[in-house]
Length: 512
Ligand code: N01
Image (cartoon, rainbow, N blue to C red; front, top):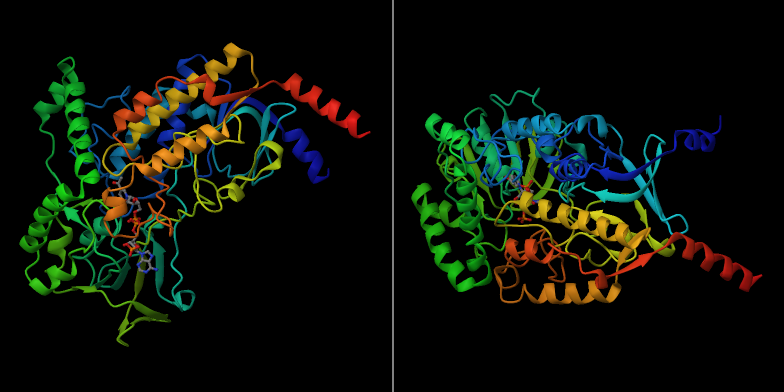
């Protein structure tokens, strides 16, 4: 059988293909089922559900948003053990939710999507996977998340290193760090969590810092049994608590848009560093120069005190090269090393933001080409030229101050409203209008003016080299919720398959 013939026989059709079985894909699937729609499939490149919480299992890995907020509003959990749950408790929640809502039978694991093409004559997407399967669908939901392709830094000699090397998202738990000399590169959200955990085990830890991070105290308290019981038994109490968390997180928007207020918070954060780090010169090196909030504010009580340990050294000299068994800094100093851990984050290049495969829309346009300069969408959900392509946590739908699950739920609601509207109109597909998307993004970018992201003086994955922020929603999250509550039909053009066929026939007759 030829390869082509095999693909034909493997071809399947569903109403909706969801890419990714993390929080986003799961939410979409649950809500489709709630509407009585079981005509969907989830294609997941990993071997289980969970997304980032399946992949990231490094020591100390935990969420920096409170668990009662970082969970579905419709699937509360009264017995979260502590304010900020560790990764395995979150993964356990995801697994249980998957079973409770009967989502597992819809999942196809180890299925990495490598192409998606829209055909306006049929109004269908054809989605291809690496192992040769193809699926056709009316709706294609991208729930792959923006942070999942590990960024391997381009450091001279890294490929020649003979010791142990791994990225924080690909932690090798079989490797025994006890008594080893370890280099950790990066001081972002992941590194500030795993470094304090491994420091007591290793012989020597070198923390390579390019830019210091603002780190503030973390509420480490566990929930007492009586509180968990009360959340489970007192009607409305857990919801009330969640509402309190929501609004206290939301109040953080204020300093983010008023750098002068952010500076006051910054003074407190400076005090926190000085209080926790004994050596004033070291404290100074750990104190960022940019305005707090410009990069994600991190939370830890253990990170700064770790530098008081005799076996931990903060290295701020740039890395010159990596040799077979050592690392050399710009000042020429060579440090022998057994293991290098890359806490260097994820690739957020606009061209592969959310996807690193060929995605073809109307008239053969290619999303990676369209997003060559900057990724943009309408409410991070729909993109002009790509009908019935729905994105979760797409460009400018990310957050630095509250739970992304809140945004995902709002987006899923919006997508379902769009699907309903299409059905009411008898349309086969809908496409956000180019001018609507343009105006939306121009307005969106204006919102960043005067904020800590534009005035804060930092470089981060939120911003591109030209200063354009492609990652964050620059307003309160309740505004996002309100603005996506209803679909404005006039924002979209609607496509009808018969009309497309007639148009094509007319065109070919005219050219004949
Ligand atoms: O990655 P990051 P992460 N040489 O991109 C440095 C979120 N998260 O894996 O700042 C030397 O934040 C880079 O330096 P610089 C987290 O908030 C959420 O930690 O670019 N250094 C930086 O210090 C973030 O949004 C939770 O100068 C290099 C670090 O590596 C996302 O996930 C928990 C370098 C990368 O930091 C990813 O976090 C954990 C190089 N060549 C993380 N390249 C929650 O709880 C990069 N760096 C929700």
